Image (tube, rainbow, N blue to C red; front, side, top):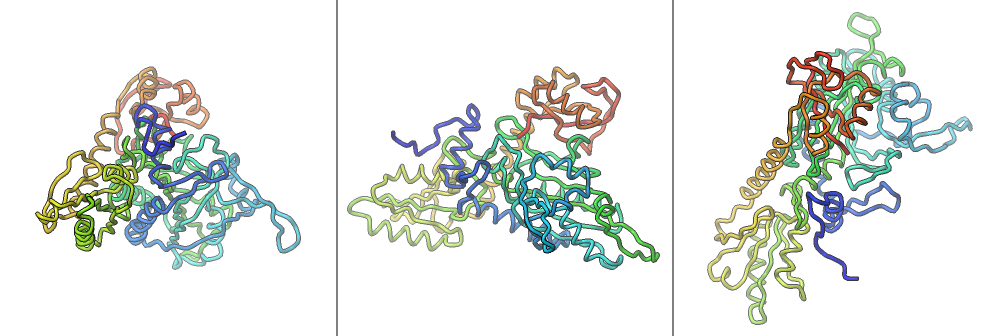
Length: 477
């Protein structure tokens, strides 16, 4: 059977199959041998490195947070100390058995998140108010085993992420950084991924296990499902109490610090791929692509040496954009251009006899159909790539803005949510059970977050009670 090289599914009609093909055929990722695991290929891992670089250079520097690393294995006894946390993660845990130094056996968990083991370290490090705040971040892998419906990058049993953990003297400074980090995540999505998000606070039934409050950013994908892109949690003092984390204050009395944690994962890569790519293949903001330019020589039998020499000149001129020359034999120029589009090369440059004679290049930008002839000396890829990034962001934002619909009844909520929209409605959230009931009755349309910067009087679309809380609803991954 002939293997199809290009994308054979439609982005908006067969989103799931289309997305899988883009990830695999653009050589960004592959499936691991165990369900729910992923092989991130060099092209995909470069994307993650750019997220890390922006994060380390901007967010961690701004908030004065240091990178470190904590163990992959967490003792069962640690995890059970915070009851709500343990209950929330119980279905997702992957267990191992290990012998302790005393010869006794204690079950251990492969890290699903690191609050417990990091808090235990805080207990050892913290002595007086002079030690505060303590702010650390780690880049790590985590395992959450309950996932049955897996999807490359978006849902898996193992994934990569960063997790920040900080403790403070006061609730005010702790919560200030919770919000500050969330806003920094929003900037990361815009400046690095060109993905627009909405931000807000999770409803009581959807907040992080053990948190007082969870804040999040969410993006709407092409299939009309919301994707949680990042979270920032105010965890209060609950973990401090059960782990005995205390410090001597200026008043010479013992106090418990306030705690927050926050994280984003390789889910960001999936969101970026799904948001921008098309039926030809991968489209990425140029900053996420290592080889930003491919030069395709228009070769004939009698001009090969001349054209390849000019291609090398172009490559040297544009060297800071890591260009490559596609001089593969046995492939047509059309095939090479299509292949460059499939793998998401931001710029294709075509050179042949006419370009040599005129000292020009023919330029094709990945997200545009037209080709343009430009003098080599006037070509400015940096500006072109900045314009492409902004174009991708504005296109994605227009799509998301068009899908925000306000409703006032439950039937409208159900209809608009199942149609693939972000639905805004008055809602009085109470607990996980009632939120799950609403979601079941609405055919999978559930609360994504409370709009924190908008309040107005209205009636809850589920109970009819008066409320000033406005919530975004959607189907979700």
